[in-house]
Image (cartoon, rainbow, N blue to C red; front, side, top):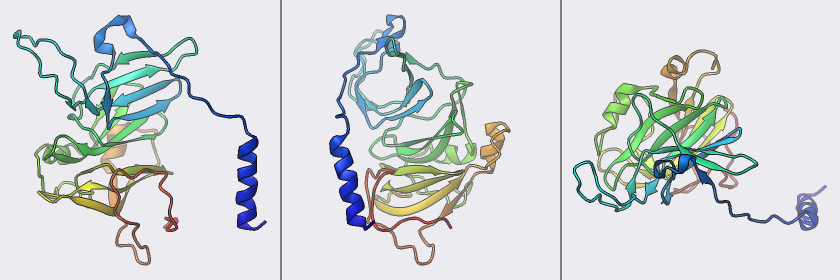
Length: 260
């Protein structure tokens, strides 16, 4: 069947399919505690794993109130590092804030969150503030409820704003936000975004591959210690798509990444 005939057949099938409708949900809040109720935000990530969804970070409205010294809290919206779990129950959804254990990522928005091994969420990059772009990597284990750093030395380097290329992780992508990530097999592909090393700021059209190693039966701290990045932007006969800010994994163009 010719390509146009295939498209026509698909369109005809779509016309006869049941219409999709939006249903507004009103999730409950665990124990009616405000700490378990996320404030309005944007630039966060959301991953669905089984009957739970995990929301991390974002540029969030700060709940007004007073700090421990009795001073009024600045409620100006800013990047946060909060992690919430949303239970997707048939009898109703419910929000709950995840209590962090150990080291955790700094606040960010515009990052990416990639699910792998059905229990791990890989956080890459994002914006901490107007001058601080990130290229650190963190992994959250939804079973143990803890964060792991595959390269703690590199993450420490990236804790400073306007950081230059880190010697602790060869081929690591430059700090960025608004990029896309896609999991293919054991590889996470990072494309585009906005950022750069040091004081550089520009739209990006580079492509990187992070290998997460196939043997995920060993502890994640050991698995991801062997992760590596590979720049694909210089691969022969692979022209880059246009620079994209806030690119998504479903961006469609005529240049397709084939298995290398």
